[in-house]
Amino acid sequence: MLHKPKGVEVTRPKTGDGKTANPHNVYSFLPPEFHSEGWVPVGRLDKDSTGLLIFVREGFLVKLLQTPQNIEKTYEVWVKGHLKPEHLEKLLVGVRSPIGILKAKAISIMGLVGPNCLVKVVLDEGKNRHIRRMFRGLRDDKPNKLFKALDLTRVSIGPIGLDIEPGQWRFLSERESEALLKTVRKHKP
Image (cartoon, rainbow, N blue to C red; front, side, top):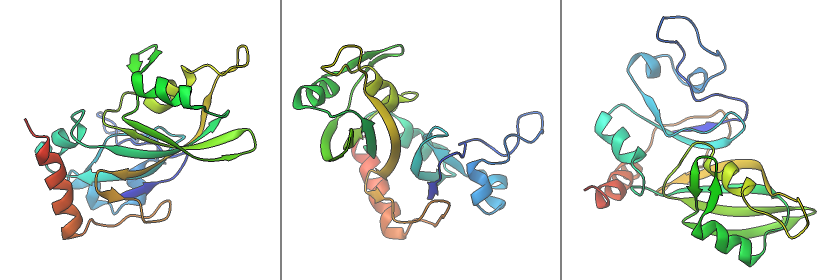
């Protein structure tokens, strides 16, 4: 697992033609053998997001972890604007976006600071920029006032919680690996 810092891309170190891709990618925080041995990140976080990434080598596990509804991912998100209960309900039902209807499995307000709100969002699917687009699709009571996800951190994937500092990595313990497998096997078709 890796705690992806802000500004880092979830890309491979080399492009298909052997040219070096962006040198500031997630593999720059891992030992070189992670890339050469075929470890791949499950899921993505955009460049502006931080948080938990899990790397695996087994293709079946990549598929299980990336299949919608197989595993919950939890995020802490700072949002510009104050969310009200009716906004939370809309996020649970679904918000229109350019890529379709986006919704949260669960959402709760953790706190307010000035004009911003800290929320906990649980997803069981993950479309491109899902959370950012979901909040952008909401409207505030004030005319033409939109909500905006300012800062986004993935704090857990299933039973695996983020417990390391940005830029740090570690192997999952045997107990964590078993719990992760047990979680995704519950949802295996």
